[in-house]
Length: 148
Image 1 (cartoon, rainbow, N blue to C red):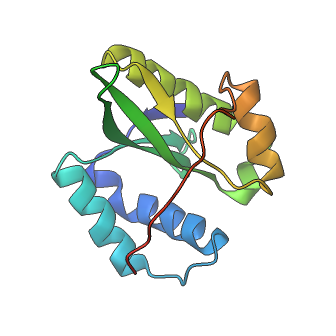
Image 2: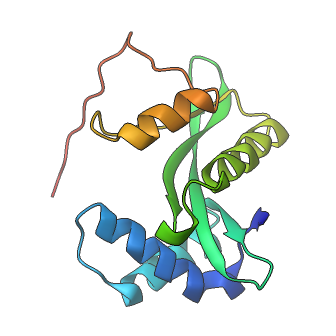
């Protein structure tokens, strides 16, 4: 299994995985919009996507990071917003490999942290993230205002 930074040549197979990820989160399938969304993020340098690639060059997983900044720490931090592995490739350690690539990217960019959120009912994620070195922050409430 190879973990590498994605590029625009990966956009179609990456969009297929991204679409599966969105469907898992109860969103309607929309490959064309996924292609447009991912292309814009890459072209505008608004996200970093690491992909898991098999020996026969099939994409089987990805994680997408968005750059943020911490005012109090006066440094960059990264939001691990998306992590997905195709069902046939789960429980093979691919998620941990993707997370390690993301952590290395954080170190290389001089970031102070990587943050993420997941549902309280995401049993797999709530086991995966602590086992990958993430600590649950119980000191803060997470609030969201949605304009949709």
